[in-house]
Amino acid sequence: MNPVVLVTGSSRGIGRATIIEFAKKGYDVVINYVSRKEEALALKKIIEDDYPVQVLAIPADVSKEEEVKNMVEEIIQTFGHIDCLVNNAGIAIDTTFEEKTVENFRRTFDVNLIGTFLVSKYVGKYMQEKKQGTIINISSTNGIDTIYPESLDYDASKAGVISLTKNLALQYAPDIRVNSIAPGWVLTEMNRDLDEKFVESEKKKCLLKRFAEPEEIAKVVVFLASSDASYINGEVIRVDGGFHV
Ligand code: NAD
Image 1 (cartoon, protein in one colour):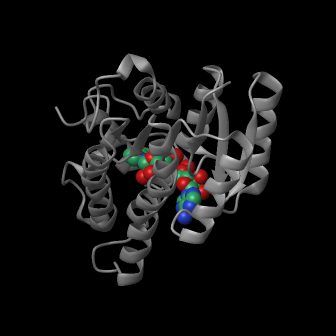
Image 2 (cartoon, rainbow, N blue to C red; image 1 turned 30 degrees about the vertical axis):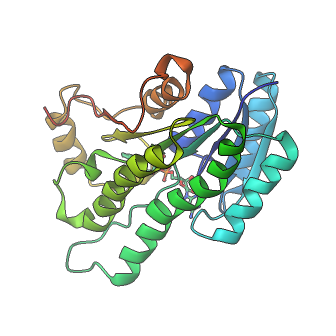
């Protein structure tokens, strides 16, 4: 019986790379998406063609409780268990400080923080029944450092994800390990609208002089899920190429 992993927001970017890394390790994988059905189904086909694992692709907005509940029920009906949850779904609404609205703030919190709570709550219930599992929450270095006031809503949501990680580790101890990863800049569509000059200046600040590839985050997720990380719990791991040094 293969272990089962759910990665939220996994039709593209870090989530997509994470699905592929888990499939390589022999996990049955659940791709979650909101609107990008074609990309999710294309990824499903790639995995099915290349790896001897089962794949589900389920639409659900992680900020909507009913959709999360239905998604988790479908996974349990199909596989009977979930061994790993990666709370990866996230948004960043780029605006200046002056343009920032309450709606921007609320939506960012709804997806990044409340979404992480909701999926953890419904998946955690089944993990507790089996007395095993692991949860990995994708935060950000923005949740630790204070660098860009333009992203204060995103930063607060990601700081919240770190706090949530520690509380969930306490809540689910000793059976379920809960950890967080704080990536620095990663080459994904989330950053596609950034000004070129800004990107170059950010690369210069990083000791490795480049953004991360999504796979470089995905490999850390898979490590945290593995028994090699069996004594890592309630922790936040920076993966930022030495940006903050
Ligand atoms: P991305 O925009 O490519 O991926 C985000 C994914 O989340 C998309 O697939 C999107 O459809 C999905 N998503 C958005 N709202 C959702 C919702 N309500 N329900 C379900 N899915 C939803 O960006 P990415 O860089 O791959 O981001 C993945 C995670 O990594 C995010 O949590 C992001 O905050 C975090 N992160 C990214 C960077 C970076 O530089 N790219 C840095 C640090 C942290």
